[in-house]
Length: 497
Image (tube, rainbow, N blue to C red; front, side, top):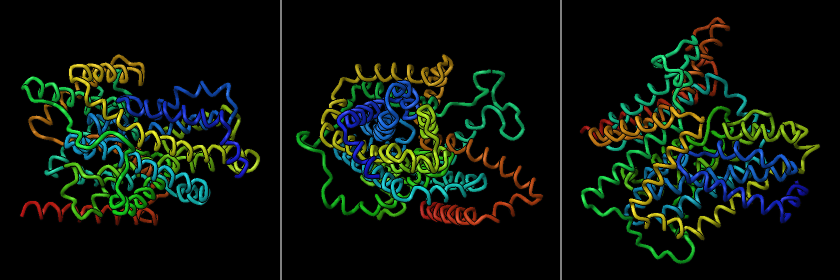
């Protein structure tokens, strides 16, 4: 451990970590790009580097991109990554009220707290947490998906019914493609481009970029001044007050634990953690009705959770060779390219490399914190650009980004169609858009896990209900789902009375 700590502080490695973190922030802030794409595209750059240097740079990209998605989510209401969708709900509202600097500060400090917490857990308790994550099989993942779907009520705004409709639309989108149980094609309309289903990031770009662009141009057309009233002085560092820190420290710990555990569960990711973190922030808040109107806790909760995933997802990867999410799956390729096999030898024979990589996550988190609190005034300068300049740039980036995901000319068409549908749904019916993404993310996980659970139950010659409830973790998750449904029904009664 000490040799890994000593190795990471060489000038070359510090420069690579800093460069990787800056690249990650830029990748995360650009709509359509993601941490997975950034790590995958830049793995070839590590071929001529030694193992520790290559992994440290990739870790910097991972941490930087996870944080960077919140920048565009707060400033222009367009999440740079799926993990930043929950952040945009309150972050963009804060920016429109002139509190962009405060929202960006909450994002930077929350992301740092979650990232550092998960890195500490990775350093100290990796084997034990990895053993717990292995107990999550298909039945547990199915119940976890149901738990995530019950969070739709927290993101539905004033109308829970509209939120449920939006979530249902997302679930319908998620069923396009090949049935995981029968292998049949569904809702493809004989179009080969739909055989693989809808790409989540492509739909994300359409849902959030296109409607935002149209609404902003509408404001200009009607001679309504579109500007963000930044009421605070831009000079100096971007800091939260001591009272704000003290008020949210327990929330930070809760959401960091949530993010780390969810990150350690294979098949999940930072987007799910962000939504659960947002719900947790709303659940413990004394003013839950203010969520969605621009509240600090609505930024801290999801940002702490989604950055908690960074260290958590590496726990099963380094100890067991099981990727926690898509980014860690790409990082597994980076490990194997360097001739490193996850497991016991990684922490004994190659201990300097593995512990050096873990310590590089600490450095990366401090790098983006320093950048976030010191150059935040330059981020805010984005809102001073004329609308007729920034919006065409966003359109071009959206289309190029959607094409680059799968090198498919069909994806930009999906962005355009989904964007128009989202615009008219928002304008005519005021449907919330975040539940659509929840349905799209959790639908495939729930369906695949249920199909696998059905096969497992059949192999054990038992009823699927008894099979699920014979597992302790499933019982705990079911109780959580029941409590959330009870709280939702209670909320509906209170709103109708």
